Image (tube, helix red, strand yellow):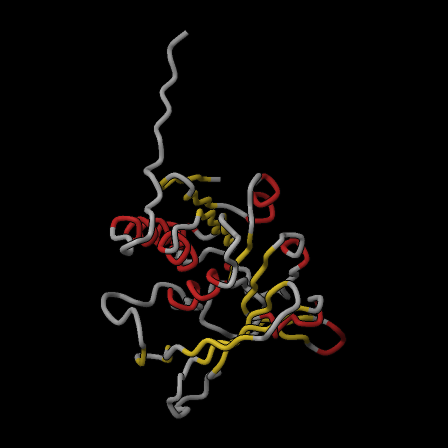
Length: 230
């Protein structure tokens, strides 16, 4: 396991969230886009078989997703919840309209769904993000992860949790949830099992801290503790 304390209240872990999450003391909300098994399909006789998809098997996307370890937290938002809805309790649904009024033009889904813990109104967020057609993050590399979400989408999710001060993303990927959290002045804990994406997340979140939004309190730099010789 590797740990990076980027700023006060911003800690990233390289490792397995199933091992790290139980060791965390203060977590208010889980906001994440888990690997929910869309590269896995049920074969005949109840045996699973892998479907061909351009994603590393080591990313955990080849097995059905079990949401139960994350449901005990006070606030929870899990993207892709419609793919494992049978394993979720009653909650509210969040819909991301990826076309934002544009006519459909490809074979991919025009909307994605997240499950949010608790009862309440279902919500829709419209934000164009289809291929090269984007309403945000147009410059630079832009695409860091196969299932990357827009920063604005994750900001919207966190805004739905006004009392959650510490956000954890157990499947951090390239760090988009972390960027949204620090831009909103929240504390953030990110966990990622793939070293290449962990390093990308560290760089992206650090860049967000170096260029914070106006009127948002910036997390303090992480303190270096000095120990006196005995």
